[in-house]
Picture 1 (tube, rainbow, N blue to C red):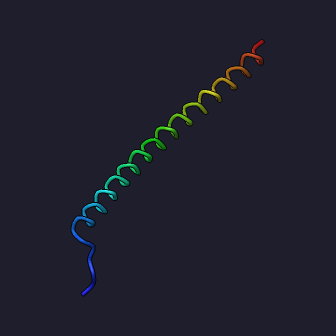
Picture 2: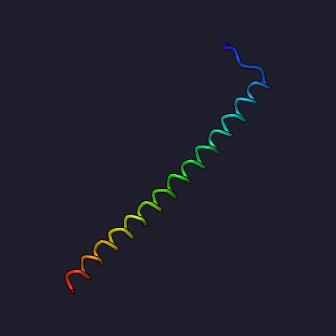
Picture 3: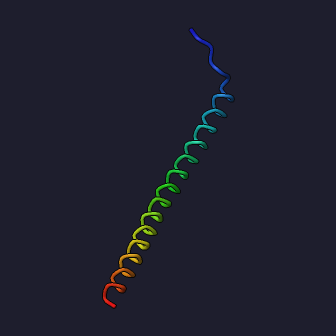
Length: 59
């Protein structure tokens, strides 16, 4: 046998765990969106650099 927390405390712990898991899911989504935006920004910067270089070569 081993001791268990009172039922109300178990419920409070479970609710807190669920809240933290939801926060983790939200943070994970934010990270994924940020990574996508970073990739798009990098592509845009590279495109701008290479187009700029091409214009200078063509001139």
